Image (cartoon, rainbow, N blue to C red; front, side, top):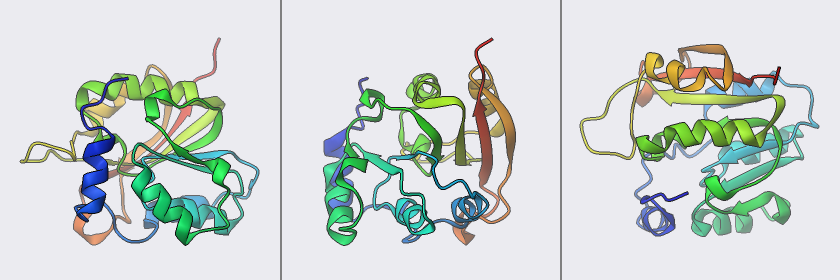
Length: 198
């Protein structure tokens, strides 16, 4: 899958520390969601994982089958140096659209908004393909438009519902009550479940 915002673009962003999406820790909505799960055997994927705060938190909670993926090797190498105990086989340097696997849960944290909007239908199909039957896609989406040309690219709940509803049952898509202060009132928390094949 072609993506003009490819590896070189994101590597430069990391090298120049131009990573405004990075809040320096696991975000509270993702943390609280993981805190409610007691099935630690779930196979997790975090695409566009960057510095991997969510992954490290998941691993510390006991989710030993946590996988991270990023198109840039730069943050992945830094993550590996910092977290030597994280299994190398669960660190994937790849384009999301070229990745293969089957997961129970995929966490969305500022990955969707980093893709060209024209890729959103493919994102939905790929997420569905990567999830096991009944698997869930959970995370945050921006509920706003941005003045500057992205990334990040924005959107709204109506648009997202129309985008996801063919492949997923929308369990929840609502205003996020525990966003970080700079994003208060600008995020939706969502839980989507892959539809069963009838």
